Picture 1 (tube, rainbow, N blue to C red):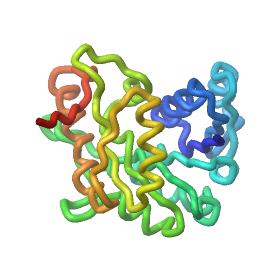
Picture 2 (tube, one colour):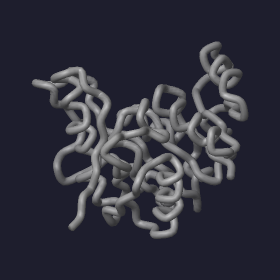
Picture 3 (cartoon, rainbow, N blue to C red):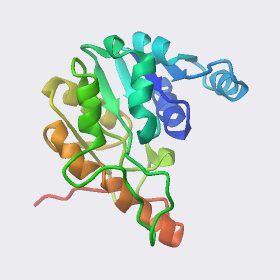
Picture 4 (tube, rainbow, N blue to C red):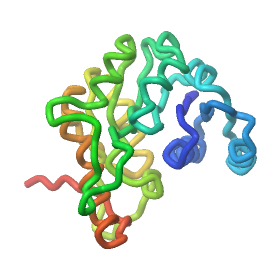
Length: 215
């Protein structure tokens, strides 16, 4: 499977390295694939390659959107919405405002009855967007270990087939997927980032994840 990762920051590199670790051909999409730090990452991540956003979008059978939420739509334009048509797009973004947290609580650019995931799905209406990997820090995204058991990866999207594909990836990456329904449920999943970050900002505790318990 070819995977295109749009975004070369910490999240993009973490997920990109995860796909490479599990045997997938992976291209990291970025504005300037020739930057030294990008080339260094490629050299240190055997099996990875780098390209432009457009090249990564065309390369991937599955495409991961892993950029700052406030630039997500402009990156989609650079990638070419037509290059994402018919593909599963994993949306790992959060609508973070460019402001400091208030008492440990992040500020978002969205309100309670909207989500960035919905806006992204509307932007690439021929793609199958699945919100996932947005509720944990990049250091724990791939095969984390918790003594209390397997953590839960909440996801949502309009396509059952796309969610099944992303669920399989989540399991491979050491998570138990939990289907929260349509892309509208991104309104509930995106604020989990606020909750996940709260212990970090308050107590410098970044080593945790969510787990859904059922009776």
